[in-house]
Length: 293
Image 1 (cartoon, helix red, strand yellow):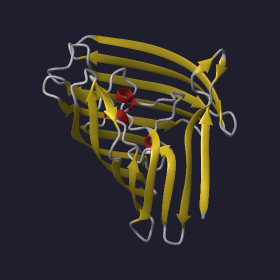
Image 2: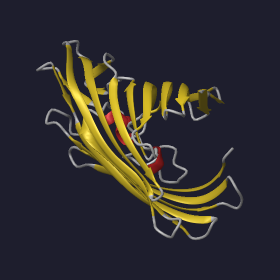
Image 3: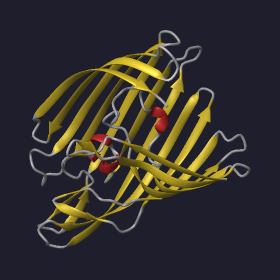
């Protein structure tokens, strides 16, 4: 069976008061249900993420440590057991390099491998990433290459005899900043740093994780809370204002008056810290409504 999928939204740039549509996902997939395998080609959510762990909120970006990215790929999925509880995914994905003091180049695709376990009690996922980082200096001193890698472990666990569930995701490695929400959206590239004096490219070490909990008060009312932390092991050569760490907290209560309709009150707290220990923080309160088509 062959399927096609296209997803767009209006969360893009504005021009003269008009919102420019943004392409989120667009891919074609071949599925062999008898052999429990599939092939996907196009733009989709990276294989390094676990969509089952996203806490329920109105925040379109999600926790700061969420491993989330949409990019072009070729992905092969297959079952590892007859019960289909275990399955694996292997993908070659777009090789953009987010570089400080340099311009990232694209050469070899990122290689990602993931294993999923789905049972009645919930799901677990392990992911591994290997990538080549290539960049040229902003000053024109030359081109350099280094290796990046990352590991991720995540899950969504159901609480026995309740509708509650517990979500978590932890990931870390070298040269994987582009895959982590806060680091991927930073003003400077967080994959690696190009040193003009030595003409070397050094991958930045980064770690991030978040945990979340969803409690159901009734079949229409639930509360969600989640907290995340991201840390970058800064290099000595980086400036004092280099991003060092971020903290993220979200808490909300959601009410569904009828099917597909959600109304909620949500609170956010965020903090960032630079290499020289300077910090900034923000608070936000949001009242939102959502209808799912």
